[in-house]
Length: 613
Figure (cartoon, one colour):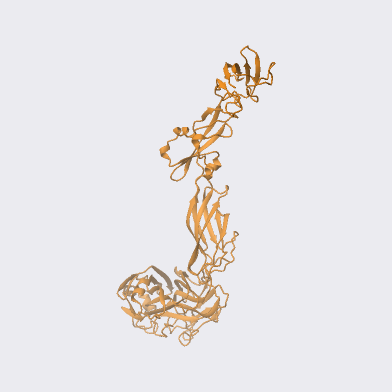
């Protein structure tokens, strides 16, 4: 993508004229293509020489002969005449309705405003079905126009005619670019000069380069200042088309000179266009002093289409967004796309850059990984992270052959079709809903074992396809690190927050709740056996240690003598740390305890315990 190219039509207007459809690019064919054209007039004679007729023929014929080794790709039927238009005609036995009608006005100084028309229709299916045969166009009726508006015949601009354009493919042809430009523009005594710039061309080899014109109403006898120039060079095709009589009722395909008031001309432009050219300048003129009258005489000429055939071996990169997926609750988007090289005459090289923009912000880049053959494509995927400064609703733009700054490095047949645009809406993280906290008895260090599923009573489970638990909102958002056994979950500490991801059809809802611990009454066993067998080797009061971490435990013998004093860091293993037996193992027997939790919510507890050696 080296630059952006447009079809530019420059109009040099010297007097009043009506609205016309500028000659612009209608279709482009890239490959081993060429074209041919047939057609015929519906005028019985040249209207500027024979002034006695004011009617057209009911039909006329022309033979199509496409080489047997060629395949018809496209066919267009054109017809034109005086007046505002007859949009329905017949080709052989098939009724044809115009796909589009162009009109143009000529302001005659004596006859007033005169309108002329041209129609076209895509007739590819008919030509493919009927093939090489004689085609007859009929039912082009402008009789009412000619009878009710005498100015056409008085001014001798009464005409009608038709042409059939056929684009074909042949493996023996070079790789060509066939550009078909169409519209309806006029030159006449009021507008004696017109320059048309065709910008959508790329010339790699000028061998056999040619340009064709379909024009209407030209008269052989009115050759005053009439010319065609290509890139500043006057062109001709003598003896059929002299340099000063370009539009003279001739047909270059048949060398006919009786194509009255119609022109179907083809010119070689090998010497008028250079390798590397990216435009063709066409200059049309009419009008000069008539030596017999001393006044300006000019032919009225209607340009209907221009066709160029140029060797142009270039790729044509386009990109198609096949599908995209927004991820609920985060700012990423997954894309499936294809890079195509369909309308091309050369491979698209590997490494062709692709840039992705969100509201003009570059958010990702990729490149093709293979050479893409003529008529082929390559699929790709990418995940884009959309920045926070881009709104949730944005314009996604994908540009192939773009380095992220608007520049590319691949010269292409068409430089203005590299972009794909799509409106995208992200799904923001849903608002978090609070549900009831869960409390459990502290088993030490402010933790507990929780059954997280008991909180599902606060949620209408039938509204969701799946429920899952996470420790952080980021894990929930990215659907990672799910809590796999929520019925038996122990956090590192409390209080802590747990998040529930509740899946819906399009996204998910988010719930959160607190896990809290509370001090519960300790469970005091009535015996233990400190024999170092690994079981019950100390006076294990459950729910005490690292829960009531300021507690005091006092142990007395049956005589009421204090023999042990413990705390959170000192458990009783059946040894004395007070009195005359300090440091010694105590014998089997019954002992008495006093447990002071040192917690304002709990009273001291007393009781007995049996020590069994």
